[in-house]
Image (cartoon, rainbow, N blue to C red; front, side):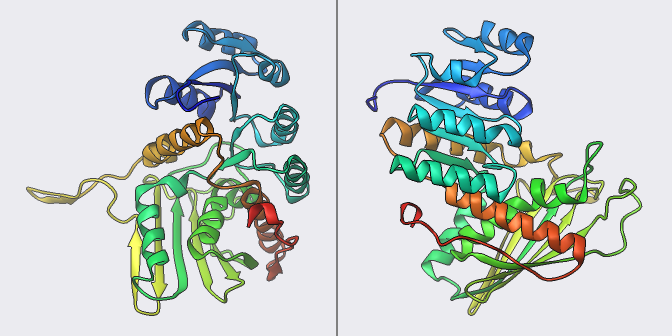
Length: 339
């Protein structure tokens, strides 16, 4: 397609994230339209499609990809369904924005990686949206410019007000800390080589069986140490922050997001209730950048390699969480396609 044509997108999975992406493509970004919506719930996709001109509902991702109006695919279905959908997209050489995780484990992520390599070119951008957040992008720029010298450590905090029913210790890493895993690799431009998990006495707000909060320690190939506090039942809102400690200074983001006010008897700001509100602009920027690149015939942003590496670190983290031991990360050599 040419850069002047509107990109027809099939949104696969129309739960919370998928429905939000449908809204985003329809109402926020430019250069794309929702050409198809796909979900195993036929009534849901019919209802969505009925409200969008030229949109067709499907229950089968492959059928949607065969629709001549579909130029690209946005995958927002549950993680276990991603591999099959990605392979269908590869078979049609369609560009993809895939919400994290690429797949739920390193073995299946490696299969996807190898399938994309067989195409000979990238097709996938993985939805690690923090790379598109204004604060994180500023911090990345400072580190790239060497403003404060060589980075030595990162301090991360990741807090949620509460967790849904059935939330597990493994999900604390796979669903939450995975974002810190990706931004660590991105900010430092180093692979994570080992993980430890420390578990202090849990909060009384945690459901039975959930060890909350936890502290994760990452070692990188470049010798940096990164700590991440994950506290998913903090009770007061959603907070994310990151501090880079460098040879010549420090830089921190996340403490004062939004307006900080002083009024009679009060001072302070607001804490967003959840990740969608905190990172709404990042999601908008991510999808717009994906659309722009796709219309140019290019692929940018987090790759299948980033999705695979994150899955491998998550697996090491869950083993460390279970055993209490330091666990090394097992990665293949990085293929030339992703260098």
